[in-house]
Image (cartoon, rainbow, N blue to C red):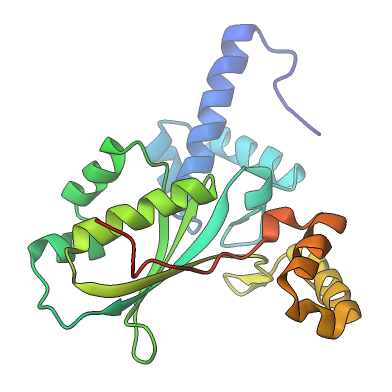
Amino acid sequence: MRNGWDNLPRVSRKQNDKDRNNVLDTLLRNPACSVASISDKCGLSTQQVYRILRDLEEEGIIYGNPVVLDLSKLGKKRFIIFAKRSGKPSDQTSLNSALYSDEFLKRIASKKLDIIPEDDYTCTGAFDMVTVFLADSTMEAIKYMDLLRHTAQGYFSSYSMSEVMFTTRKNMIMTPEKDAFVQYMIDIAEYGEKLKDPTVMEELNQSIGYNRYTSLNMNFNDRTQ
């Protein structure tokens, strides 16, 4: 794996690692961010940004334009929350959470949750709200869901959450995960009717190394405040 500053003095390597992490964090929060914007946000020259982006691309961490990030190489997971409205009128607190106000973002920070919101949708049908976000772990995602539930104060009657198994297309770009997805579907087909038994699915996940892709389906109707 290429690292353009392996031979630099220790202090320089530390600073470069910090600059690299700042660029990655900026891209995680806005993959369409321009080089000039990254430069402003991170306090780097455009040349430094181009160098970091080049190294990240050579390492396979980013690809495409707008940039798509390989979350598995960053220790991040993508989760989706589905929520159904209760019929209770919304108040300013619930609106603040829905619009990620400064107040709500401060609450996330106070809980020390490393959450990166990606997309939010207001829907018709089985669910009224869908939110997509990144988290380091399932436990972190559950804590975030509990925060949303508490903040909404009964505005939503039920919540369900799933972990994304594969992202085969992002920002209109086919991702490297498409190959893993195809293999996964082949493995599932081989098991056929046996997959109706949840213990068999767990054995499949363990035998083919797909533990990190295990999907969550949690209903939070009965969780206490």
